[in-house]
Structures are given as structure tokens and as C-alpha cells.
View (cartoon, rainbow, N blue to C red):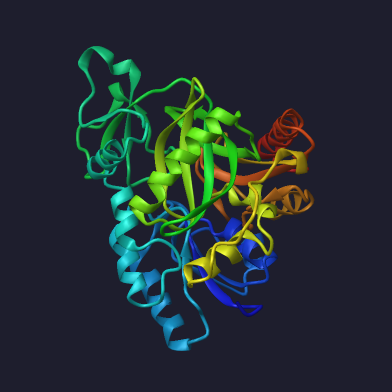
Length: 383
């Protein structure tokens, strides 16, 4: 693949993808709803495709932009991040305008159709959390309500608080006890390579019981658990014809990886595992999706150091002024820096803090200290 290949990255927030792409030697174009300062600094071009206030992607704006790229003939294709879960048709419409570098749109649709997706897992003999259209009345406390057309845990509710009106992606999933984890996989439609495994940071915010805050990795599994995960991937990848980078969320229950959901796209884990593949993960994703062979590599190991990232959410509604924006800039371990004038709702995402150390415990401690520092900054409004 030629150096400086121009590729568009579309997501609710494209910063992570753009940063990784730039480090991999690509020329990234950012399409997102936030337009954070560091996203604009890293991207060769940035275009808005929605509203940060609602975290909603504007379908017409995205398709119009993809058409413009196709007319220019200097953009190889586009890669999706988070935010497209509720837009399965948009992937197909976008692919008709500019090549989608990733899974086929039908694969993404299947992964977001609970009845078909989990039925297919059962046919494959893949251990997964039990799902139902309605939970047992006497076990409501053991179930969550979910929406397959959402991401980040914003849609998860206790089953007893399920809305009366439910969309086509609605379902109930049994709660499981165990550490939440994720595997990042690079695949060519039939074969796969395990990039690495991460611990997910999941906490309650307000009435949301399972909000995704971030992750820490690489994480290591005991050999029997790793063998079970590999056996899962041997069946999952060819059955769904997964291509490029894909995320598999699972709970480790008594040493058994139990699948929670499939994210058929590059996930936030790539920022924690990028050194695992020579040349960079997003470059490998683009190359494989354009027909190159899977690279040979070993999964990321904690022996090479541990990374962490955690989103900081607003404790109250706030407006970012120049003083606060400058304070963000003064902290090199902070990403997703909002522009002056940005308004953020209570419990809305503000920024992301990073940490790197020799051990997972050290990373957790540093993330906690940096999160607390930003929360104090948000309360005071100045350095």
C-alpha cells in the first residue's frame, strides 16, 4: 500500500481512528460529530456529519460527503467506527458511493439483529449470554434491557426499567458475573489473527448501569481460557465472514469466555494494542480489506507494557471556555479535547485520559488520579 494513502474515517468521534491512522502513515480524513481540537489537528481534512448535542449522525451529510470524495478520486475508501449501530442501511448506501473498507454491510446488519445473530451463535455452539424477547417475570433483577442499534452502554437498562415502546433492535440479556473483556481480531473473511485482549472499564452513571468508560490492555488469559476463545473465533470468523478489525465483547465466567456482542468494526481497543502489528493496526485493516494477506504476528503481550484509556463524563452541564480548553491542552495525557464554545450536557463525554505503565495496577491508579484531576478542573472551571 502506498505511503500517504488517503482514507476517510467516520464515527461519532473519529479522533482515535484518525490518530492511529496518522501514526500508521495514512492520510486520514475525519468525519464525525464532535470536531474536537486534536481530531482537527491530526486529520488532513475534517467534516461534520451530525450534532454533538445529540450524538446523532446525519445520514444525508455523510452520503453527500462520500459522493464528493468519489468525485475527487483521491480517497481509497472509508472506515466506520462507533455510531453506525442504528444506521445499518447507511453502510450499504455509503458503500454504493465509496468503497467501505471493512465488513460487508449485510454482516453489520446481521450482528445488529438480535434474534438472527444469537440464533446463529447457538447453531455454531458458541457460548453466549442468554437472550429473550421478554425476561422471566420472577427474575427481572437478573436481566438487562438492551438495544442492538446503540453502543457504549448508553442503551442498557435494568429489565424492570425497560421502555414500553421498543425498537427493532430491542432485546433482553441475562446478567453475568465476571470481568468484562474484549478481544480485537484481524480477519480476512475466513482466517483470523488475534491482535490482543483488553479489560473493559464499565461503571454505572446515573440510571445507566453499564456505561463503557474505557479499557486497559493487553490483558492475558490463562491457557485453557485462551484456547476456548480461539475455538470461538474459529467458528465465528468464517460463519460471519468477518473482515478487517473486529471487536468481540465477552464476560469471563469461571474461565469460559461467554460472548456478549460482536462489534464488526475497529474498536477503541486498537489504541491499547496498536504495537502488536508491524506498520500499525489501521494500516493492516485497510490492506486486508483491499485484498492483502493477513500479517503474521503474535498477540499483544503485557510484557511490552500496559496502556489504559478512560472517558471523563461531565458531572454537570457545562460550557467549555478558552481557559478550560487551554487547561486541557496543557495535559499531554489528555485526548478528545473539546473546542472553546462546546456545550456538554450532564453525564456527557468530555474528554479521554490516557496512561501507560509496566503493570495493570499502575495503569488503573494513574487513570484514576488523572480522571479525578479533570473532574476537579471541571468543577472549578480553571487550572
